[in-house]
Every structure is written in C-alpha cells, then in structure tokens.
Amino acid sequence: DAGVIQSPRHEVTEMGQEVTLRCKPISGHNSLFWYRQTMMRGLELLIYFNNNVPIDDSGMPEDRFSAKMPNASFSTLKIQPSEPRDSAVYFCASSLYGRDYEQYFGPGTRLTVT
Amino acid sequence: AQTVTQSQPEMSVQEAETVTLSCTYDTSENNYYLFWYKQPPSRQMILVIRQEAYKQQNATENRFSVNFQKAAKSFSLKISDSQLGDTAMYFCAFMKRAGGYNKLIFGAGTRLAVHP
Image (cartoon, rainbow over all chains, first blue to last red):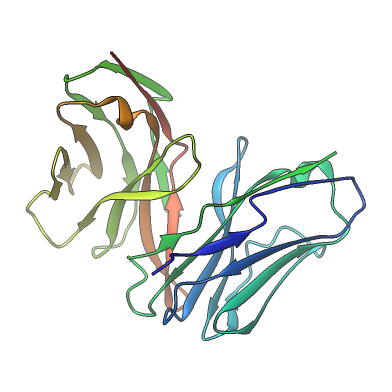
C-alpha cells in the first residue's frame, strides 16, 4: 500500500490567494483527519470525516477554511483567502473506523503564505 | 479538559546510550490510549509505540519501551542503544473519546539529538 498521499508537498502563495491541499487516504480506510502543525499551537485536529461525512469540524479556525470529502479516496482542505498566519504544515491521516488508535499520517504539506 | 505535557523541550544523548523522554497527561477517563510519535526532519509522523491504559504491562518495540504509571498519569519513553537515526522530534499523545470517535491530543514535543 502506498500509504496516505498528500499533495503538494510544498506550497508557497501570496496573501489573499486561494490554496487547496489534497489528500488520498489509504484504500479501505473510512476515517480521515486533517491536522495543522505550527510552532505556536503544536499539532491540532482541524476536522474529522467518517464515511465521507464531516463529523467534527470544531477545530477549523475560521470560515476561510473549508474541507470536503467527495468520495472515499479523496479529500481537500481549502483556505480562501489565505493569510500569513496560515503558514504551517498540514497533515492528513486515515484509519479504519473503530480502530482510530491506528492513524496513519501522510507526509504533510508545508504551506507558506507571504 | 485533557492535556498532555512534555516538560523537556530538548534532549541530547550520545550514540549507544540510553535516554528517557518524559510525558504527563491529565484525564478523568479510565480507558484510553497513549502514544509516542517520532517526527524526523522529513516531517513524516511515525508511530513509535502505543499503550492501552487497561494493560498494566509496559509496551515495548525493539529499542523503545515505555514506563506507564497510570496513577501518576505518567508515560515516559525510553530509547536504548540510541542511534543517529533516532534524532527527531518526539510527541507524546493521548487519545480521548469525543463525539463518537477517538481524538488525538498531542504534547508540545521534545527535540532529541543523538550525537556520535
């Protein structure tokens, strides 16, 4: 198995631009998590999907952030408009529902907003 | 509220020596999971070891072992025979039940440097 795939690995954009981060979970996994890692706040959960449905989005910082999961093999995290404080590493992780103690992380996307 | 505290921002150890990373957590739950994750410079989050709270036996994975003290809410990681490849950030994490799913709460991390 290829593991969790994220793209792009690096993204540099200007303030005000739209940014879309992509994630392909491990085949067969039906739980998907988006995390953000910053120096100030560490690793924090942004949103959790189960069977493509958003279950907990309480960690999404504000309305500029949105996430979708149109099918079992693809999810996006969009920031519109982006701001310099959104600069962070964004991780996607997947697991089998009921086995959330085995979350597999993707390699992360490093986002820099100038 | 559940919190995870790693009191050592940085640690260093000589190759082949043993090092222990500390972690304490706060919870009112009785059944939960605890984890140590490794994040090398590549940024990949790698699960090192997992402990189930209802198991009294400390988990071990090759050179990695934990000292789980449930009453003290302590969960330290011991790395034996340290190798240069162990250089990384290490995160302690607590898994809590939240809204029908299991949510990971991470500590701030400990940066470990292994020196030759």
